[in-house]
Image 1 (spheres, rainbow, N blue to C red):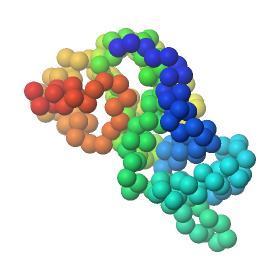
Image 2 (tube, one colour):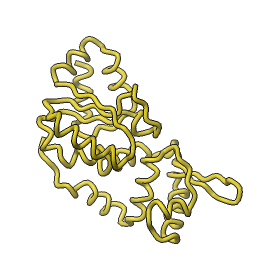
Image 3 (spheres, one colour):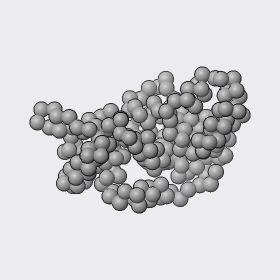
Image 4 (cartoon, one colour):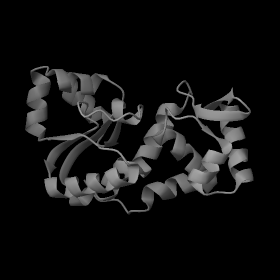
Length: 206
């Protein structure tokens, strides 16, 4: 799989959304889906001007991406999990930033990668769990490079990322045997960072 220009994914978001403050605001809620935050807290975390943040929060609440709730004299905002385009935005953000973005940008250094999959437990829930796999990489993978990329992402995200690597043949064998982990991976919510859903499904049904 060919390597992408390092700025390719972020540039796509810049062109689609125009407002960099909006991108940063959406990114915050995608990476912190269970964490309510008030206006000044978001201003502090994003290091942007308060009026710009207020405008984006109002717009994002209006379209339903976030919802708000009053706590005392403060208004807190949190990701709306029922937002109609949530899955699409989740995919765009995780392919542009975080461990998904980092792997996609350096995919040419990882070897012959067939699929990179972020599990729903990682993308839709913030609490780390050492017993749950966050990332699955399938192919003939350079483990040292993968470990380095994941390690850097862990530092930036301030959380541990549990990952597993499978060769194509191992994945196909587990699929054929209806291995529980592989079946759950194929049937549950996930973000496919690299590879095609059509091919993944064909592997599943054949």
